[in-house]
Length: 407
Image 1: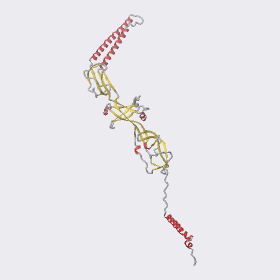
Image 2: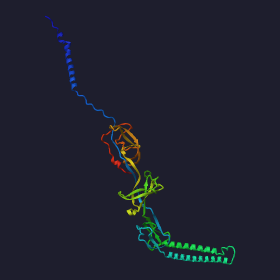
Image 3: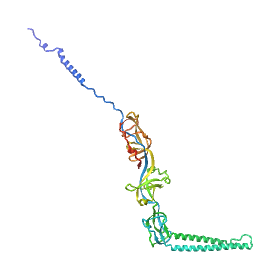
Image 4: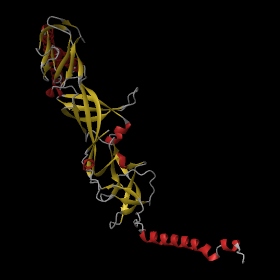
């Protein structure tokens, strides 16, 4: 019988062994092609524009009036101690001569007993009449001596002694002395009526009816009510803002509004002068403001008043909020061509005429059409790319309406 080779029967051919591998590869490629056909292309994202996103604002010009705050107490411009120039007993007092009394200029406040001074006037008048009579006698003697010289036919000039000239000169001197004594007696008599030298009020009263007053005796103290004064402390910065150093206050006094503790305006005054020396302790300057007829507004002496001093005026300034400013009085501006919302950053140095806690007031360096960047930028550099927010132009109307800046 023919023998069967079992080893040959069990070993498959090479083609049969490759068929499964080929099938697997084909299936993989088929799946990959199917999956590739099902895949969708990713959406194309538009390229973002380059630049820092900012908001901008344009400002309108405004008028700026600088006003400095200060304070002080009302004091009389005129204050005197009322003294007696003669001695005598007080015989009458003006009803207004009492503490708080108000009087007009020319009123008689105190009257002293005039009896002794009337006697002195009568004596001086009599002495003058006697001296005048003696003068008339000496004149007559002199004239007679001259006639006698001529009647005797004597030549030359007679001597002064013969013409009685020394006696005549003495008589004339006696008349002048008597006239002076009479004037003094009348003046002393007039001083028995002590007259108010100005319109004012009585601060203190130190005499009463029947009291004897000696020469230079104090009767009381008076204060004028026509004009009051307030000393207002000012710093060097305040002086510069108000331009007080170079301003002639005599010709152009500065107006001042005076207010009470509640902020109500009581009256208007004017700064008339600047004191020539600083306060030795505080080194503050003092401006003196005057108030006309303070009592008419019920403002008493020693009343504490708040003052707002109106200073320099600037027309057409730009009020920029503090948060928009850069250091060293610089401003960041948006520069664009107007056709797109992209631009560059520019930095301008401006002239600041005044600063407050809210605004910088710029006088030069900006145009009204400039677009000020209001968005904070950490490290701004001139020329850096910017993008402006569309439709978000800020309208800072409140800033442009500020007309009074307080220190």
